[in-house]
Image (cartoon, rainbow, N blue to C red; front, side, top):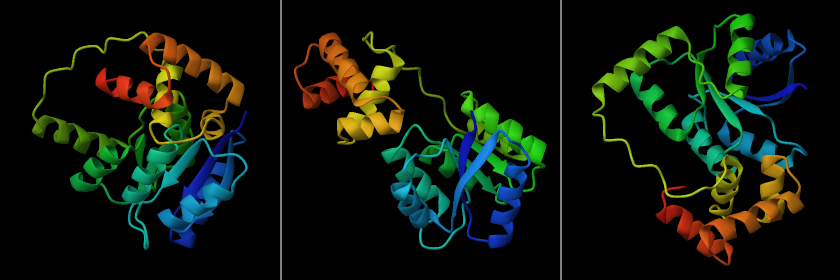
Length: 216
């Protein structure tokens, strides 16, 4: 199955380079190119199927990549976002990670490195170009470490937690199903299990109970 990738890049030359690099492999399909974050959100709203990955530039007009990452993750947390940029300064790395970026690559990575990184992020990894990884480690060393939180008191599955996260954003069952690529009936079944496990009777109670337990 092809990995669907949407490109967000305001410079046509670089957007063309990224598209061509992706299309060198039959594993990937480019679903579109957006000029900025606002354009990206508008394009995704019109697509019949959401992409698996968004490659995100940082410095763009109208809405930059960090703001777009935060907005996209708030609405569609299942979409993987890989920053593709020429900026490797610590502030951008820090802000991109806080916004929800799943990976951070330099734009001049060769096609084979790009392909490997995108496959890695789809498998749950967090690919970073070596210069980025070094600076991310420096950031970690500078940041005070807080005690690890205790394990939440619940027996919810990963899928049930994903559904709770979607419900907490006020999405309808149909939207949750579309975002997670499952049927509305399957969403309803999971929600029944959530109610039983959390001992609640409606969505508001479920979301509130999940927040109190530290689940979402």
